[in-house]
Length: 140
Image (cartoon, rainbow, N blue to C red; front, side, top):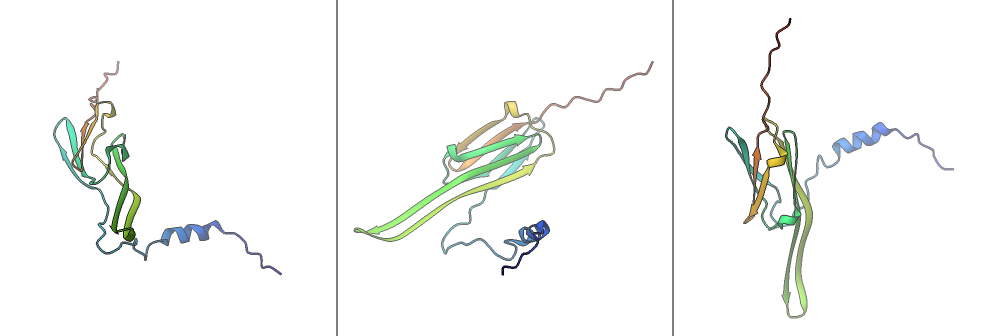
C-alpha cells in the first residue's frame, strides 16, 4: 500500500530558499566568469553608464528602464572548436544569459535615453527626468 503524504507548500519555499546556497556554478578551467561590470557617472542633467559586455552582438543586449531602475541583460553565445584533421579534439560551448540591475538616485527620462555599443562596451546616456518644484498654495 502506498503512503500518502500531505502537501505542504512551506516545504517547497524552504527548499527554494537554500537551493544553490552551498553550491557554486560549474566553471571549467580556463573559462572566464561572465558578468557585466558597470561604471556610472553623473552630471546635473544625466547619468552615463558604461557596461562591459565583451563578445556579445548588439542584437542580444536588452536594456529596460522603469523610473529610476535600470536593467541590462545579454544573451551570451560562445563557441570554440579545436580540430586536427577530421577528428574533433575539444569543443567548448557556452550559452547563457547575464544580467545586471541597479537603481539610480533620480528617475530617468526614458523617451530621450540613448544607447551605443562599441568594442564590447555598452554606453547609456540616461537624462534625468525633470521634476516639478514644490508649489505652495495660499489658502483664502
